[in-house]
Image 1 (cartoon, helix red, strand yellow):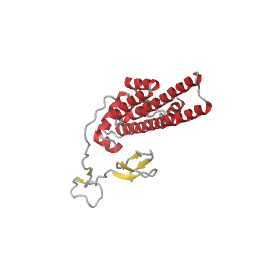
Image 2 (cartoon, rainbow, N blue to C red; image 1 turned 60 degrees about the vertical axis):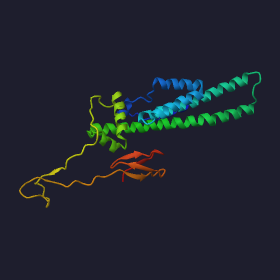
Image 3 (tube, rainbow, N blue to C red; image 1 turned 120 degrees about the vertical axis):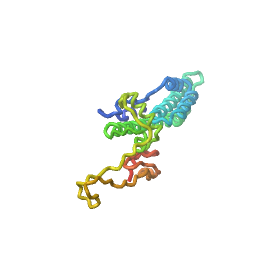
Length: 251
């Protein structure tokens, strides 16, 4: 259990950040049942955790919880094996020291090693969602973005993901529950240029002229400087690499 406590201490939550209002792990009744079953009957708990994983992992806010479920299931399996070893030691037959060492090593390798990996994935997934939540808040409060399509373009998420994330952030008070958002993207009109400007392209007679629209930048695939994987990055944005977590900037 110390592994998870140590990793939870690494989770983001600086004072004043919007992610402070989010729970570390929002668990449902099914999640608690899965954890309980995992500590009692590991194989059945693993089946329940995988059902939950494949059924909800497309939701950004569920990813930390799903990895946490798998962590608890594997730790539960190790606890069960330790109970079996203790029973064997105090039984009439008993086990010799060498067999005990080999069993402990194998159980740690098969159960605790994956548990540690899932704990790290859970902490990293929550950190990424916290960053995403902060990005939403900045765009919505400071940038006053009210279109789902614009939020999707600037965060690198799908519009369906943005809708789910906004509902989740409203639920925990990170965003005002009264905020309204429009589907699609906002297309701003061309900006007028005043005749007072000394540009040689201004029309005579004090009339207002319009600048031609600038070509719109498109998302492009950029190689991660950390692992070399290709990541799709939106214009003037940055994102964490899907494979190693390194920040990839649009350039």
